[in-house]
Length: 497
Image (tube, rainbow, N blue to C red; front, side, top):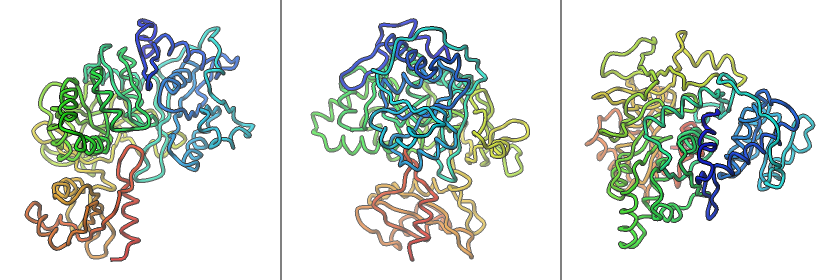
């Protein structure tokens, strides 16, 4: 991980991090990280891959603690600051974290661990840090660096262990693909217990010597004000954030809209990921910003694997082409590569793929083919050289009446209806059909299912038309904005027809 810290040594006076009105240099970052390492080591020579769970707000302290864990030879386990205690407890106990670092705001939530004699509980503050003295351990690429948890949309979350070498490969790939430089300035809005925020935004920016400006908590006005400052060059978000930004933009005066559009136009790159981007949102954002959002595909287990091009055509509804140093193939149920134009499961191989599911040897073995390909469970098809996601085999591919139906395709059509703000489509068990296509809708008014089906059948085959509808105020989502399809299925099952 030494190369990640390289910019801090080479450009000590450059601004690394901005939080509200405060700016922090690379020199301050590296010094605080070293002090955190000394605090964690507490006289030891090496943490030897001890798991260090930490609950710190996004910003300078978060990065300093994460870097300090890596410098000390520990495995970083970032905790989601919005999760309830049982979810936090699951991560701490599953990783068998030996050290727990918490900011003052979360001390009460985690206080049970302050009384646990098997764990070292550290109340973090700048006052607890002393300037680093002595040597830090030498860390090889093969050693464990971080455990992030899968989103848990289809099963209990699994801890994904990545090595220092894995993280370096993930960062290097994106630095090259998205042309990061020291002149870049980005905004971080994303949760920092997921690869999107930690790797794609923060680590890539700091590796390149760029500046990361944290906006926490998310506030659309603050985001636009930050962009209006004229410093931002790169912006990454999930579809739900773009949706919120669009809603706020539309409430602004014509004068403000013009100023925002002009500022957005000056950015060099805008990216969307972590969930499927509705084409309608893509098109609306293009009107507002002048940018055709770059969609990409990745997972906690693999970092980013597929991306629309930085230079070249970006296709709405497509995730693009394999990134450099990442091997990708599509296979059928027999693990044989599919013919051109046929759908298949995405499988990935390369240095950016994770090491193992923490403490789950059987799950790790089942995740890989005998010849080392990671099985993503996502179904895609290649059209004109671009990958298009059809859905996740377990939740987005509905098997009804002998057909395999993509829930994502139906969702995209539904979102084009003028009265539908958002939707989620699932398959629910049915004796006759195997699964019924069911759609949960967010709409200003309940729509007549007969009229809606008539509208849909003008745009898709009848066998894809939902047979059940449910009107909701909001869809169940995880921290990254993904709809939790298993929770959605439960709502249909629990709601009488």
